[in-house]
Image (cartoon, rainbow, N blue to C red; front, side, top):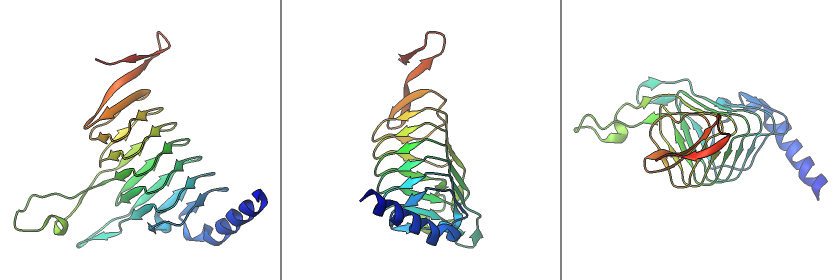
Length: 191
């Protein structure tokens, strides 16, 4: 059985490698809702579970974009990720993303009340997620956000601002609730 799984994934990799911007060895994407492979730069041993939408937006209204989605080595993504990118979304190595997470570098403004929100030009700002992070179920990460190294984001959080290295965040909006203190070598609660 293990041999069949290995052969299946190897064949998938062989047939799909040329469709990605880059695809590292032992990386595998299960069938997704929408995956724009040509915008994905994928390191080694990346695993993406089923029903994900990983979409690069090349054009919106009359504006053109150059989307770049970077998944570094050993990124693991559970089912139902919704990732939309018009500029750049980068996920650091060894980062694990649980089910039903949304990550976007796109904001739909509502400036002009005479134009439906979906028809207004989008605003884009890059998203960077550091290495060794854990992002739990139902988290939303908005455009323009940088998340540091070794960060845990609690379930159902909405990340609206940058997050420093070595901390735990949770809530709506997400706030730092613990941070690692290198002087005491302990995780400390933030009041």
